[in-house]
Length: 98
Image (tube, rainbow, N blue to C red):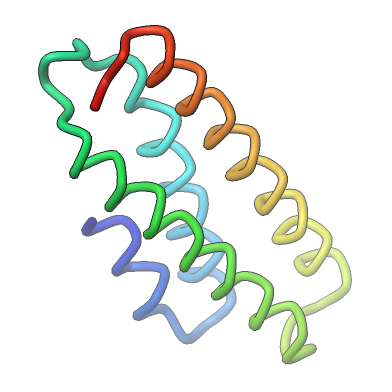
């Protein structure tokens, strides 16, 4: 949750981009946990936060406040988050978490 909050709180380009990358790392690490360590409620919160981070990224890109290169990197981050969510969904179904 702290990683997502850092995205929401960041107002400048570099801190925002850094927070997004940290969030992606946290999101990708969830399947490394034992299934018994992650409740269905926790997974719902993680998925909700991921969607909100994607919305924040999209809003940032639409604001046109960053360079085109940074906007491209942020758009690639959306794909990274979506991919991590797909892996999380697979992990959840495979281990019947929730």
